[in-house]
Amino acid sequence: MEEELPPPQSDLSSPNPSSSIDTTLQKKHQAMLDRLSNRHQSRQKTATTPTTIDSTASFLFKFTESKRSIESLLNNSPNTPDPTLLKSHLANISSSISSLEKLVAESSYFLPPYELRSSLKCIENLKQSLENLNSQLLPKKKFSFKNKSTSKPNPGNLNTNPIAPNPSHIPQSIRDSPGIRNKESQTLSKNFKNFKEIGEFTLSDLDSCEVKLIGCINALFVNKLRNCRVYTGPVIGSILLEEVENCVFVLASHQIRIHNAKGCDFYLRVRSRPIIEDCGGVRFAPYCLRYVGIEEDLTEAGLEEENESWGNVDDFKWLRAVKSPNWSVLEESGRIGCVEIEGSGSIETEVEIEKV
Amino acid sequence: MGLLSIIRKIKRKEKEMRILMVGLDNSGKTTIVLKINGEDTSVISPTLGFNIKTISYQKYTLNIWDVGGQRTIRSYWRNYFEQTDGLVWVVDSSDLRRLDDCKMELDNLLKEERLSGASLLIFANKQDIKGALTPEEIAKVLNLESMDKTRHWKIVGCSAYTGEGLLEGFDWLVQDIASRIYMLD
Image 1 (cartoon, chains in turn yellow, red):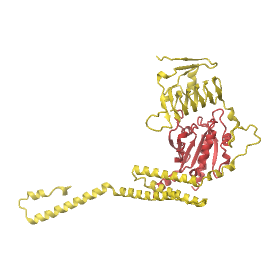
Image 2 (cartoon, rainbow over the protein chains, first blue to last red):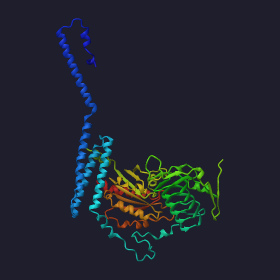
Image 3 (cartoon, helix red, strand yellow):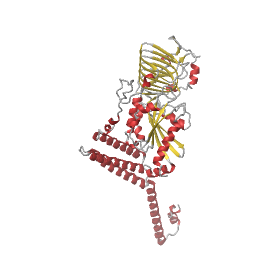
Image 4 (cartoon, helix red, strand yellow):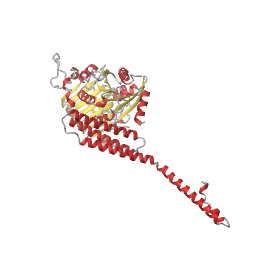
């Protein structure tokens, strides 16, 4: 720092400046300025770290070069039916893409985030177009060996299902799975209270029905319901609903997945976040079912606590920060209130609860 | 030396295995991973995206990628295929209606070239539920016998709820991968 102190001060203060002293001082001064400017320049150089700039630029240059060559390979595929030629051409492109990918990976530690992201995106696009090209040029490869393995239907099996012509013949037990199917305009109730061993239960293809399930079950599958009202006791595992329309569900479970629901209301007690996929106009509210002994069933299923998860819905068709338009919370004034059901018969009363 | 080769070196030294868990939604993938790691499985939300768990298993380190199975996000599975040593396909043995879906998705997966070297473990999960199909029945439905002869595979019945069968499955998977990858050690 001493050099930066201006020597002219001493110059001015000297009472009798001789010319020789003046020149040496000037020389010194000049040298000092040179030194300072040199230092300034070198400092500037280090500040901008030319290596990063250079290597980013050279990376981008290399990347664009090979990207262009891959693209031209993709666009100028040989117009020949010879599969070996095509294959080698495609393999060529594939290896160029992977070496490009390697280049990005190797440069990833110094690349700015934007360049990194955009080059990864670019590679993804290249892969996609290679895949398209692959299926376009060599389309029949996928099917060629699949046919060989089709198992001949066993002639000894008398129970083969005639409506399932596909090779994956599903075992007999599929028809035995417990459930309620193909009903219209009925009140259906089932009491699992005294069942020793309970498994899964299925509700499918119901129209304008009222369904009441009392007691715990392990898993519930709901499929193709229209204009129904479904009230169930706690489900220990999970509930999967698909293709339901204009229904009201009162359900309790550890996990609830709702696919393809339209215009339905869900009154849920759930340990985790309920999810919807391909749904529209679905509304959510808390669980509101009563029957004799429901408390112990809820405890048995580990669902005695209300943790307010019913309102934390994840919409897999709306992966954005703003709230999904496909679902909403059902306003308290629009809710059905507490539903009270009885196990044995079809007697059912709806009572509005007045919370104190 | 590039970043990739450094990573590969480290991986070899620490005996890491990369395991990809996939299967339809509601099959119990996350529950299996948490159960095997001794974690609480009572509150698990359907997986939006993926979870990574690193588990020490015998003398190996397993990097388990548990990827969500909802239909919307199945198309993202392929982003996780690279460098997979072991593939775990989880089946809900009580979901009889969607077995065709399950078979179709598995068939698609096995066509994938990047997974062609991976050992395949099929978990016939939810064996604790009455009415669930047995592993033998699942194997029949999925037509596993007709799989490419070069593939190392095994089907194991399990219950992520009770923990039964999980260790048996992972023991096989880890041994099978080890015998392929770390044969020279």
